Length: 65
Image: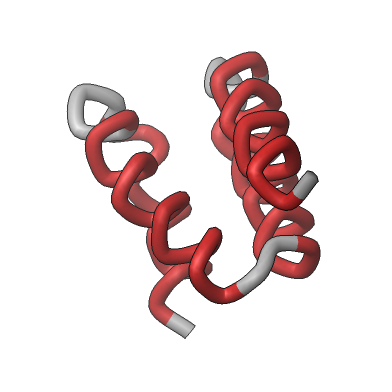
């Protein structure tokens, strides 16, 4: 079940990556719902996903807290 939430989160983030503010909102929601180890996995995935999307780099501030 928990794994499904992480995969769902990744799917949502991929779909909203066209809009930086929407992406940040969805990321904040995901962080509030995921387990700590899932947040670490999400962080690793996110760093790779936004590597070629400079407009989304600001979203990393939500994972630093």
